[in-house]
View 1: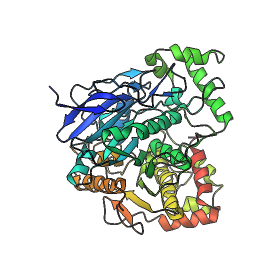
View 2: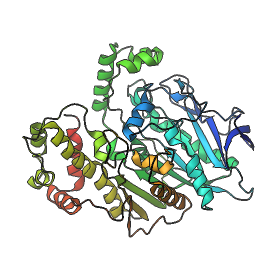
View 3: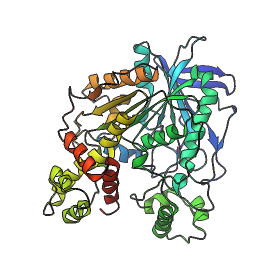
View 4: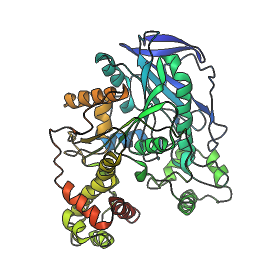
Length: 479
């Protein structure tokens, strides 16, 4: 029988959470409601009485039923699942959040709050996945006498969160996140949290989401952490791009464009995701949701050494076509990476991994740190993957989250996990995780990216790093 703990919340009523040692988790709390799969979410605050039993996760928003296993593959290993937890999905009941807090919080004290926004390319993801459990992070904060409260949120992805159509509210997935942030601001004090001292953290598309919210400004948010992701990896795009995605969805599912939305409302999720291509891009649209306009106090930003592997296609790569694409850049670009028209597919992919890592992830992180007008803490994650498989020997995309949250007992380098947790906890508490004049490297004493100087020279020759990034990103539509 699981151990539980009960809280009497002024607005939500009596809540029973799951107790694990000194940490209690209140799960499956609904922050917004939906009238239909594609409807604009409707916030449930000021506080609406919640279900008393908060020991179980809410259902995931609709997505590919094997999405969690896909992410395990991308990390490199399967994460142990908590006994008794079963996956469930819902088109209407998936907008929930989970609050993880120390069991004993003095009545007179309000703790800083960390809010986690998961990644998944705006294609999939759920706060209930075991690799995203926030219990070890909160336990770490208690052990270092810097306790925090941590919150993870669900939001709609893929067609239901980002497919654009004139009859639909735009940016539904981003607005879901916004409603979750607003709900936390209005209700977290009842859990012992300081609603005016919040930090949002996101990885990959979650990092892009954090970027959108920090540009708009969000009530109570003082700090942000962007891990291997910024708005440039999942940018808001013009209507013609969304029309193209809509046409591809209709073609893949044999839908009549005139009635496609209604058919998607009623389609079996199993049938839908069996036919829906995994390589469709679901992106926000302009204008993005507005916010409070309040500036941040500090940012933490970083990348993983081999982030670019996440962007490599599963099919073969035509090196000749890739070289021709990059001929619009200075000759020094191809020379730096040794990319040649006669390269076979495997060689071309290895070099493309370096290109994507440098220009899609590394340069944006470093540039943000250099150009920031507020304290900004830059890191590089260089820990090598130890699992057998395609990522072995790489600091691959999403491995950083596995180390930060500490839900993989088989990870050998526990010191790195502890270091990352303590750094983030200090940051959430408003302290410097390290000197802003330094670059933190997780996994080695120094960063060994010998291309750094040459990369900056290429950026100068090309007229700016963002121009090079645009050329690099545009390749993704062709390979």
